[in-house]
Length: 250
Image (cartoon, rainbow, N blue to C red):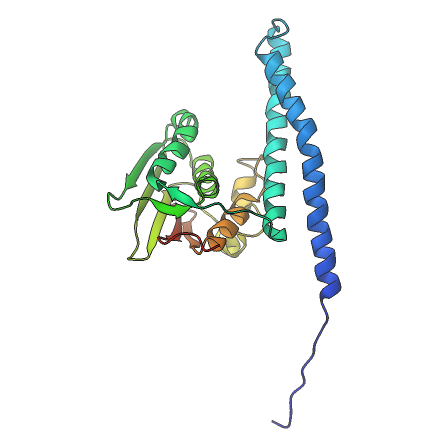
């Protein structure tokens, strides 16, 4: 070897553009939130009959307006979460948290969908798991996203197992496994990227944003934990999340 060549490139401009785009998305999302909340409120009032009874056709159309608006609210909230993560303004507020109680609360929210799809669901919580320092709001988001995906992409009469246990002396592990459609092997390396949705589920569910797992990964890693999965299109998917027992590092 006679010598080496080193090439340096100033990426300051690219970073500034990327930050400006993120700030624009955040501002636009904030501006959208108020009118969407107003539409939501008035739709709820009309559906509740506060200004008179609706006929069947009116209720049908208004219900579609309400559900479409709900999807828009979910998208705006997801965009705001992504912007906060990328701008470094996502606030973590750790407190003593009963993670098993939190998991049961998340499952209760999803229970109507679990029943509707006739899914066999089980939760196992290790008796040695006690209170830990964590942000319950963020942990709820992690569980909600992974669990709702498992329910959404598991065919009727499928199975979902959720377990919480001690991985070792320093870490807790959450495991959510399903017998769903799985993730194509050639797309598994993209599953935590923004706006990505696997080819085999796009036709089965058109409402997804492709932002949930990106947000989950950011929250878990910013909490000092790790997330990974094992998936097969014939056997389903299992997600693993580890979190430090000594709490989030601020």
